[in-house]
Image (cartoon, rainbow, N blue to C red; front, side):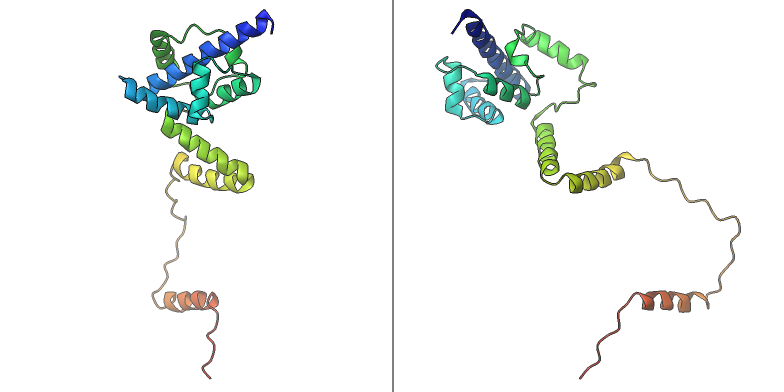
Length: 184
């Protein structure tokens, strides 16, 4: 390897640790040693790698290659190439300030619950795109569209007599019902 690849390896290692720090910061307020061990396992699951592999990366016995770097970026919602560039803004104070400023503008999930829902929707969409579009638009249309305006009364109403309604109702109901089979 030449010096450039060692630099990229170090940058990727630093960024992976920054991603873990960000994950810990968003998951637990005051982590202790036991909590951190559990979080390392959860972080590895989030990255879709084995916990032992994450441990090897942290211990520097494994490097983060091109494919794994892209996987980290995708699963941690970072732009393409983010793992290959140095990022000094992920100290705890700067991370807090940047998240507070653009929280309203972010479209990426903010916590595990939102990531779960987004992942669920994406999985459904990728398996059944047309059905997912239809069902999601129906569901979200109910929630996101304003309620319909109350119907306007017709300009002229003709009062119906009670004697006209029952036969009309009976004929409409009867038209939609199949005849019964006769007994033998």
